[in-house]
Image (cartoon, rainbow, N blue to C red; front, side):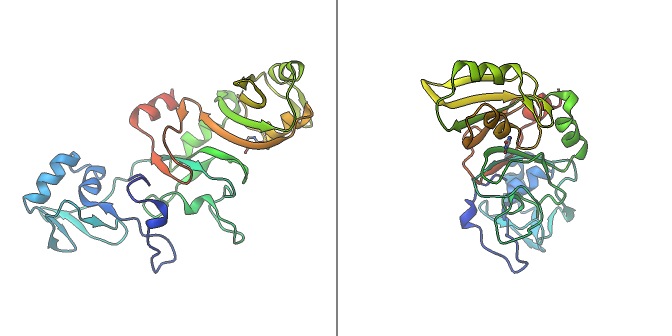
Length: 255
Ligand code: URA
């Protein structure tokens, strides 16, 4: 399920202190690998699907995967245990952590950890940075994507203070000296005619790297947004929304 089905704010709080994430029954069946969504609807209308022992034919019915017992022809169905990778459009002000340490909002509240326990962020974005943040239950995928030898490109839009000159842009392109060593070459371009809106692609993922790079050339970052991670783009994902990666996206990412 994507958060477009139920907007985040509409999700009711549950009595476990988390969020109930109801899923349309046919979608649940499809995701569990029972049949396609259309064929799952046929199973439902044929009266072959039960939820907590009751036959459910209504196509709008929803289930809570954590609580409800779904069966087809009497056989219990559960969500596949295979790895899951999701993309979040991280809003500003949310901390990249799965464990709350204060009252500040955290990314764990925005991704479906109740459906997919074990989801873990692949890397991190600063609290004030927005955009693509991946999560996966597949630790190997996460490690591979973060490993410096794989040079996965990450593209950011940075609003910086003052207008960046050509020579400063060139310094960023060639690589500049930071306190933890020189940066690798980066791609740098201006967004339209504005010299304070810069698109930068880096192939590393060091702590606060983009901010430190702009700081080093005298143009501190005012706002930062990650618009691409490897081959992945946000598309029409709104801030705070998540979606599962498509099979094609996963295949490209693994390549
Ligand atoms: N570089 C930064 O400085 N901050 C981020 O959040 C991501 C990359």
